[in-house]
Length: 300
Length: 141
Image (cartoon, rainbow over all chains, first blue to last red; front, side):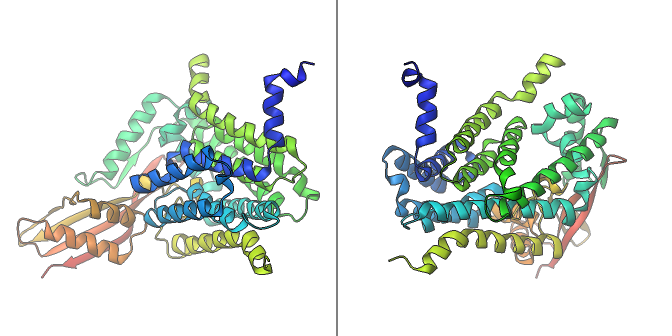
C-alpha cells in the first residue's frame, strides 16, 4: 500500500482536502510574507502586516479570525492611502480581498460569500484591464506600449533578447538615453532608442493575445453560474498565472490572482483548487529561477 | 442572526469598492489626463508608455537677471509630494513643492516654475519625446 506512504500523494490529499477558507486565508498571509510590493516600504506598515501574517499562520485558527482580518484590512488600507498614486494595482486588489475576508468570515456561509466576492473582484479587475487596453489607451493595441516595455524594462530584457531580436547593448543605450531625457540639467526634448525590426511585430502580436485572454477572463468570471463560458474560467486563469511566472514581473500579481482563483472555485472542485496552490508554488519557483535568463544562457 | 445586509455586504462590498475606485481612476487618468493609467487602482498596468519612471518634475527659479534649474530639496516630507506630483500633478502638490524650493534658495528669487513631463513613444521612429502634463509658475513675494 504505497499510496498512503507516498509523500506526494499525502501533500496532494492534504492540500486538496483542506477547508477552502483555511487554504485561501493561509495563502493570503503567506503572500504578505513573500512579497514586498504588496506590503510597501514604510517599516511600520510592513512590520505590522508581517507580524499579523506570522501570527495567523502559526496560531490557527487565528487565520479565520475576523479581528485579524480587520487589522490586515486597516494596515493595507493605510498603505493604500499612503501610496495611493504609486502602489501597483495588485496591491489594491489585495486590499479589497482583505476587506472581503473581514466581511465574510463569521457568516454562516462564509465560503459562498468569499467565492462570490473573489469571482467578482477577478472579473472586474480583468474587465477594467481590457477596457484600458482595448479602448482607453490607443497605444496598446498597435503594439506601442509593449514595444516600449520590451525595449526599456530590464525585467523584460531576457524576453526581448530571446524573442525580439534585441541586444544587451541596445538596453544600455536606451537606459542612458532615457536618463538623459529625465535629467533636469540637460535640455533635451527627444531621444532615439535602439531596437530590432522584429520587435514591433512581436509586440503587436503579444498585445492582441493579451487583450484576447484578459477579455475572455472577464467574460468567463462575470458569467453567472458555472456553465457556458464559465466552464473555461479556471483553465484560463491558471494559464494566465503560469505565463505571469514565466515573465519575471514579480511574485505579487500572479499570487494574488491564484488566491482569488482558489477562493472562487466550487467547493467540490478539489483538484482545481490544488492546481491553484501548485501554480502559486510554480510562480515563486519560476520567478526566482528566472526562466528567460536560463533559456538565454542555453540558446544564445 | 445574520442580516441580509451583512450577506450582501460580504458578497458585493469589496467588488463595489473596486468598481468605484477604478471608475475614479478613469476620471483622473483619462478624462482629466493627469494620472498615469499604470497606477492608482484602475488596472491600466502595461496599457501605456506613461509609466512612473517616465514622469519627471523639472524646476527652475528666476530672479533679477538670471534663470537656472532649481535643486529640489531632498527633505523626506517633500520627497513623497514630489513622487505624487509626478504621477498626478495636482495644484496643491505643486504649490507645496514651489514653496519648499523658494524657501531653500540662498539668493532672492522672483519666480519658481515647475513642470511635470511625461513620455511619448513613436514605435516607427523609436523616438521618445517629452510632453508637458502640467506647469505652474509661482511668483514669490
